Amino acid sequence: MSHKDAIVFHPIGFIRSPFKTPEGMPIQPTGAKDVEGYIELYGALEEGLQDLEGFSHIILLYQFHLNKDFELKVKPFMDTEERGLFSTRAPCRPNMIGMSTVELLGVEGNILRIKGVDVLDKTPLIDIKPYVAMFDAAPASRFGWLEENAQKSDLLKSDQRFVTKS
Image 1 (cartoon, rainbow, N blue to C red):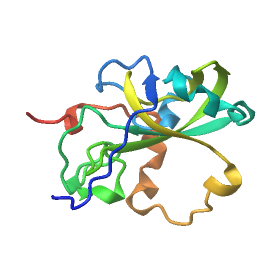
Image 2 (cartoon, one colour):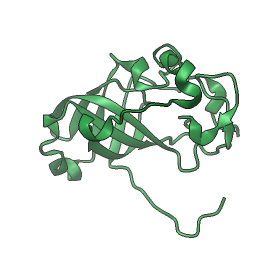
Image 3 (cartoon, rainbow, N blue to C red):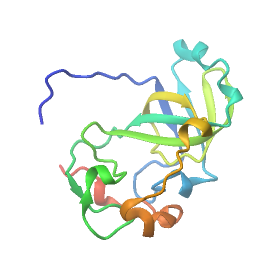
């Protein structure tokens, strides 16, 4: 795959969590309800955190920094059949971007304490957005192949299936 015009992102900080390796990690925030972590935002960006503490939840956009390759058909954690990559939340993607909604416990300087973190320790953070249920919680009526499997998300853990093969 070639890109005519590259888009370059730079980390704004790092997500810190108790998960040092991908094996055994929760695969979605629902499986990490009580897992606490924190965000180390670069100090120069601290002023941008003003008013964020008024929100109970935030959306984190981050880079799957350990993944280097992807396939267009994958066997997702919550299924035994191959599925099209874009119908899954598999971490190996063309742009390696992940997203999680977490509870914001507090802001102290450039440190954000969070709960419900399902992210590998030292994951580069790309952006933070406030979660607003009126904007972000769409009333969905179809869940594709996940209709039978979504309830497994709080029980299943990560394994080796998406570890880059080198």
